[in-house]
Length: 181
Image (cartoon, rainbow, N blue to C red):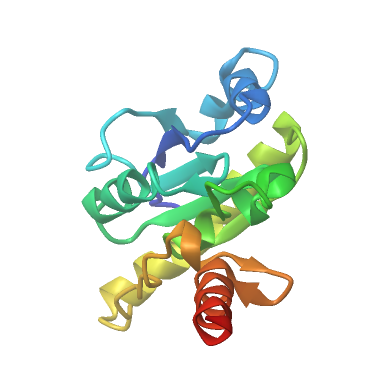
């Protein structure tokens, strides 16, 4: 990393987690772990943030909020999925309202799995994110940073259960009822 790195600011969003990871994120701000020693500041404004740290799984109610925060951040930006729920949906993956991890809504740069993820792992993920951020800054300065492609917005009917989406299973059941009549 260059010696002229701007102190990274991060924005944290709880996307329907159990709050276990959120408590660990807050622990990172305490004097024991002190992420400010890396120059990291927690902000509430997406326009000031360089790093988007998301905890919890994505559902139909919060997917638009996750996208709005992501789109309000200026380039270059880094997304960190913090905790197993943010990485893959975790224990809530099979719930009817859970769409999955953060990557169903926005592109993720760094994954920090754990239930609840330890503060050391969060700090490690943020420091890894700083490397990604520096690479993106260099690519942006060179005019080579491609625009991020957002995944299609899924719904609960698009969830895959036993290899078949809920929507397709319902349609097949409806067609079977029509055939039987």
